[in-house]
Image (cartoon, helix red, strand yellow):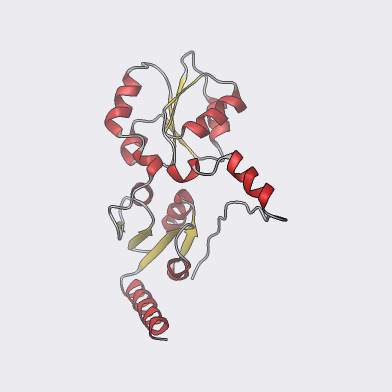
Length: 209
C-alpha cells in the first residue's frame, strides 16, 4: 500500500507543478503507463512535438530521448524545453554522428540529402528534406535529380525506399538496435511455436489529460 500511496503523491505533485508552471508533458508511446498517465500528449516523436506547438504552454517537458527534445525545440523555438534525462539516447540517431555524416555528404557532391526525422538536429540541418516513415516514399519520388539521393540514418527504411521507388539511393548504414532484434525469421518462429498468436500493430495514440 505504501508504494501505491507514494505513486499517487508523486503524480499529484507532478500535476500541481505542471499547472503552476504552465507546462505541458509530452511522452513517447514507449514510456511506462505511469508516465503516460500524467502526460498531456502521448504519441510518436514528431506527433507529440507538433501537438505541443498547438498548446499555450510556457514549458514543454519531453518524456523521451534527446533528439525528440531537439525536435520539440525546433518546432517551439520560443519556449523552454526540458528533458529530464539528458543522457537518454536513441541508437538510430546515435548511429549517424554529424561529423561523419558531413564527410559522407562531402564525398557525394551535388546529391540531394533526405533524412528520416529520427535523427539529431545537427543532421537535420545538413538535410535538404526531412521525412517521416509515412511520407518517405512520396518525398523520394518527388525529387528530380541527375545525382543519386543520399538517405540517412535508417538503412532498413532506405532499402524499402529503393524497393518502392526504384530510385538510386546512397544509404547511410544506420539502424535501431531494438528494431534489428525483430527480424522476420524471429517473428515467423514465434508464430510457429505459439498457438493462435495475436499480432498487434505499433501503437500510436494521443490524449489530453
